[in-house]
Amino acid sequence: MRLPEYKKPKRVIGWGEYKGLRKFESIYDLPEEATEVLLKLLTVQGDTEFASIEQHLPWLLNAPTLSDRVSISRIMVDEMRHGWQVIQILKEFGDEGRKIAENLLWTRMGKHKLDAFNIPFNMWEDTLGFTFLIDRVGLYQLLAFEDTSFGPLARAIPTMLMEEEFHINFGYFGIKKLVEEGKKDLAQALINKWFPRGLDMFGHSKSYTIDLAYKYGIKKFKNDELREMYIKDVKELVTPLGLELPNPNKNRRIF
Image 1 (cartoon, rainbow, N blue to C red):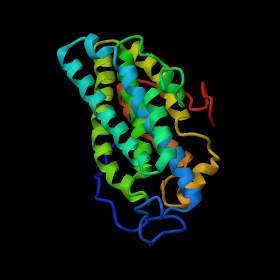
Image 2 (image 1 turned 180 degrees about the vertical axis):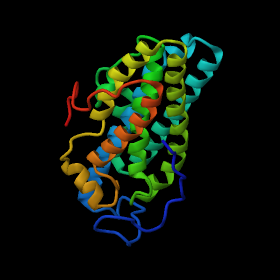
Image 3 (image 1 turned 135 degrees about the vertical axis):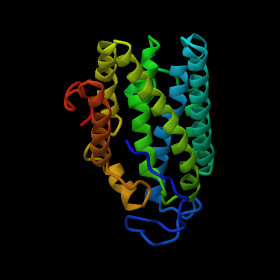
Image 4 (image 1 turned 90 degrees about the horizontal axis):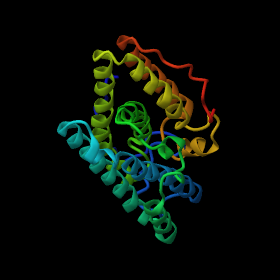
């Protein structure tokens, strides 16, 4: 994947029914329906950030090398900062936002909203498959938020995107190293395990919430658009390694 160059967010809304108008800089500027959509999307985004920390935590001390431990610590710090940024934005929504933020901080594995974040990393290599494939979904979700119509969120996204690049590169080069070390079967097993869960993370193909998110300029891509970009991206990366992309329609829960 050729990583994009991130630009400073503009002051006007770039798509949807409010295109060309000044961005929503306060919750009081947001239409009521847009507020509901944004709270729903921020809840999921924040949940993934804190859930990822919980999954990585056992390998902070048990990673195979010092370099790996440093990488895991950096990933956890990034995810914590992303979660903290979401929390700060949620607090702008008054009591409802603060309640959501509090719930996010107390949610634990098994209760997270997306299946991929309720799976413990039972072996070190799971961190590689996860960061390669699941964090890559996170990158695409952030790209959909890039230059979003809600000003406070738009200003947080560029830094989050840059930090997410490190995570996915860590995972990709880890998978590549497994292949080079003659562990191609293990690398393929990781792809088979995490790829379907990554596809599910994009949500339903026909999502009224995402339709509204586009309408209000909150997200600029629909779920299927992001999913197809992701599939193409992953295929271009795994094929040169001699790995196969699983059937995108198998072992899925959400279509």
